[in-house]
Structures are given as C-alpha cells and as structure tokens.
Amino acid sequence: TAKGPAFPLGFYELPEDDNALKAMADAGVNLVRCRNRADLDRLQRLGMMGVMPLPLQDGATDALRETITGLVDHPALALWEGPDEVVWNFTAYSGLFRTMGVHSEKEAWQKQTPEAVAYAEQKASEIIPNMRAAVDLIRKLDPSNHPVWINEAQSSDTYYVRQYLDFVDITGCDIYPVKKDKRQLERIGQGTERWLKVGRGKPVYMVLQAFSWSELGDYYGEKETVYPAFEESRFMAYNAIVRGANGILYWGSQFLKSKVFRESLYALTSELGNLQPFLVTPALPVHITLTDLPEAPGATQVYATLRKHEQEWLLIVVNEDNLRHMGVVLENLEALNGRELHLLYGEGSQTVSHGELTVRMQPYDTQVYCTSRQYETSRLAGREFEQQEGEGE
Image 1 (cartoon, rainbow, N blue to C red):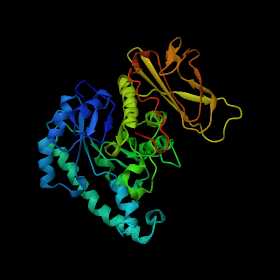
Image 2 (image 1 turned 90 degrees about the horizontal axis):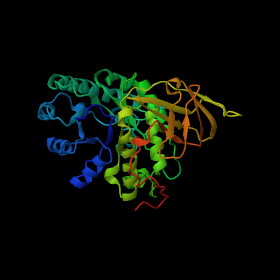
Image 3 (image 1 turned 30 degrees about the vertical axis):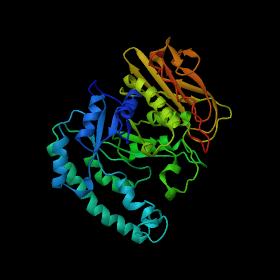
C-alpha cells in the first residue's frame, strides 16, 4: 500500500455504494477485486488496493494488451489475477458431468476414466500455453512487475498446476467448509499446507467463506441458512496464518443477506488489520510439546507462529484438533524471557520464563498473545455472532 508493506486482507466483492466501500476500508480491508480503472480510482481514494482479473487463458490478445496498458500505471493496482480455479474447471469440476455433459459419469476425473483424462489433456494443451503467452505479455508491458496470482480449488491437480507454476508469482486456494451438517474448519490449515507444497513454497493466498451455501442457489442443495460463527471465522483466518498463508481474501459476500454476519466478518478483519505490523514480518520458529496424558494418537495438531515488530511480540496458537489439549508447551521463546504476554480479547497474562509458555486449549481453539494490548481493535460489535441455522438477519 501507499503506507508500505501490508498483509493482504481482501474481498472479491466491490460494493457499488461508496459508504459500503468505506465501511470495508474502515474495517481493515485493504484489497478488493476490480473491473476497470474507475474502480481503482475509488479504492485509491480510500487508501485501498485492487486485484485486476485478466483472461490469461485466451492468450496474448490485443484486448489483453489494451487492458494492461490502460491500468499498469495506476497507483492502486496491487496484482493481476488469472482465471479462477483454472485447473479444477477442466479436471474435477462437478459441472463437467452435471450440467456440461463432458463427463458421462460422476467423479470421472477422480476415477481417471479415459474420457476425463483425454479431455483434461486437450484443455491443458490449449489453456496453459495461452496463459504463458499472456503472462509474457504482462511482463513486457508492466515495468512495476505486479505479481500474478491464480486461485485454485483445494484439491486442484498438482501435475497441471505445476505446468503454469513457473510463470506465476502467487498461488493458493478457496475453502468454504461451513455447511449445515459439517464444519470441517481444519481444512483451512490443511489446504494452506498443501498449497505451500504444490506451489514449491511460493506465496499462498487463502480465500475464505463469506456466505451461506443456501445463498448460492439450488445447484449446491443447501436449503438452510448457515453462516460461520465469529469464532469459526476467526479460527479459519488464524489457521491459515499459522500454517503459512501470505494473504487472506473473502468470497461470496456479494450474495450475503445477513447484516449481522457481515458485521462479524468486519470485526475479524478489523482485528487482523490491527496486527498488520506483525503480519508483514517473518515467522519465527516455535517448538510445541503436548504434555497431555494420555496424549491423543496421531500428529501434533497444534500450530503456532511468533512475530516481532520493533520491541513488541505476537504469538498466535491454534488447535486444529477436535480435542482438548490441557498442557501445550510453547518453546524457543528465550528472546521473550521476562516479558509479559497478554491474551488479546481475553483475560489473563503470563510471563515467559525458561523460554516457555504453557497454555490450555479447547477444541478448535484460537489464542492470540501480545506483549502489548494496544494492538487490540476497539471494534467489538460482531464478535459475539453465534448464528444458528435458519437465522441471519
């Protein structure tokens, strides 16, 4: 941003109303998906930045050249976006069977049927060379070298993604886990880790849920309105961060009918926005030991990240388990010995000694500690949102 490096906190929705856009900016949102130069002008007036989608799959067309040259010098342009879920859409997208008739059976790609494999190979041979040519044109016309980002589905095919990986800068995926009958929140952390692997360590942006599946129409078969509770949205954001995400965006708010759920999202982006000085710094290593007896089987599902800004420290701890952990020992904190860590938005504090902090965690718990409470947001409205099925006005 104009003020220096920022951790992307974005929305795909660009409100038509200036007051609604200002409400986003006031809530810490700094990145919004745009369509044209006029949109970028609106964002610039509020100190925000823009994502500009480009049809890279069409190749280095005259229309693409015109679009790039008309936008490339705009100070509010942050990055270019390639086609959404591009690999998913020619491999595993359910509509290939349900609506397009390309696949003759359900889950044809997962079963690796000959028709699904042949179709994917044909589309990849057309689309990926076009994308490469389009990005080559961007590099030629963009002296500021704005990054190119492509968002994929959580399980998009590694083989095809890596065919375009060398010429894009940012990868990642969208995950919207909250439905009526399941709330697989831990998928966010798992997806973040997967895309760090698939992307060979390139920056990862995670796209999170800002809607109820019922708002998307009959295709998905969800009839009841079910939004993530505030604590669920908070868990998902911090789960992405502790697993290594470099940015967070929200999709689906353009369909949103609930003012109180929107308020809960803005409460969260405001909280994250107040932590910007830490989120742009490198993550420092934290070693975690679980001392529960008996310890639950399987891998340690508690994750943490430590950040330093000037003389202050931030420690984020997330429990991905649907289990309590009553003795989580966070180690490698020698630099904080004698410093007091406050539980943000909670009561209590601890002084670090022996390079350790010991905490107790409930299932899917998120705990954020800081050496100063000045990084808490004063925006508390929306933090109590615990929407039940069928509610949401």
